[in-house]
Image (cartoon, rainbow over all chains, first blue to last red; front, side):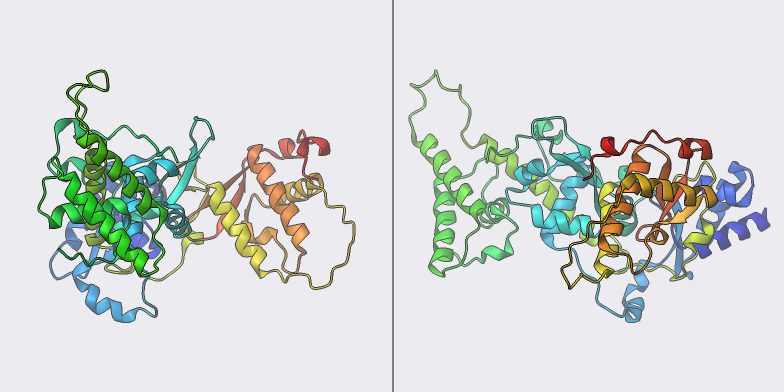
Length: 185
Length: 256
């Protein structure tokens, strides 16, 4: 059991990217419940205050990440400044995250502004992806968030997003998403 | 009252409106439309006087505000035939509230510990070593956009041809499919990059890419990626026999 835990720890350490439970079962050739138990044990080990590394559930897998409180120190290692997402970028990403699959006209109706440039940047940064085409005249592309979106923000899955109801006191009928009426431009 | 606002600060007209409503301490459900419209138009005017390019969306919103204002001023009680009792501001209020939510969510995203900004990963790259073809290996599905992007990167390394020489090259997608198929029979898994020989002409690259797309479409290959931004891998999923007897007809491919 301790050996299994050690092996999983090493696999996760070496991989760097999130490894799913299934993947770890496959790699260790161990029983699924044992693997799960070992992961929980490891997560507890790494949540101790003196550890600078955390084991987190990210994008459907498990991954070692540095503790966010150490960010100011670790940033010294960075060669170049990270490109921050603009306010428009975050706003568009928020709409796509909650409304996916969503088309560009729908996004633009909600934001009240042309969003082509922002969406191109989000696509290039691999934060959103094209899910298909909507079955309406013009067949507009449908957009959704990517797996990298979850990785970037350290989310388990899309259900890990805060529920929209937590934001702004709303009238009950508004708590549900608005029916979208893309602008008639 | 002077309003000193820089439009670039706002991500759009809804953002600007929301700011005006807040700074006037108005109730979003009961916007004093005359006041807001006036302020909004003042700001747009100031921008124009400064010769700044006011984005079209800001003007569209100005028109909408004036329209709402005019509807509010019309005596409505006599006019029962028209949409019964609908507040002319209703749609705008809904849009503002919905927009406000996403703006709040965006602020929450900004606070989350972000990779490479607040949280860091080890730098080793063993991605390919950890890759295997086990069936439960649910890897990233590659979208056409990512594929096109990978191809675009390859193309950018090819020197543009300086001399313009017209040579009729007979590049056939069918031939390339056959060529790729033979390679896939030898090795069941090949990196995307390996298909494109360095020094190849652009035309060859294009045909190779089309051949790969065709094979993917016929479900002869899988295109996968172990981790975001890592290499793309092509895996043969069809049997040798299937690959050797592809129902290909040059005319059907229609890539002339």
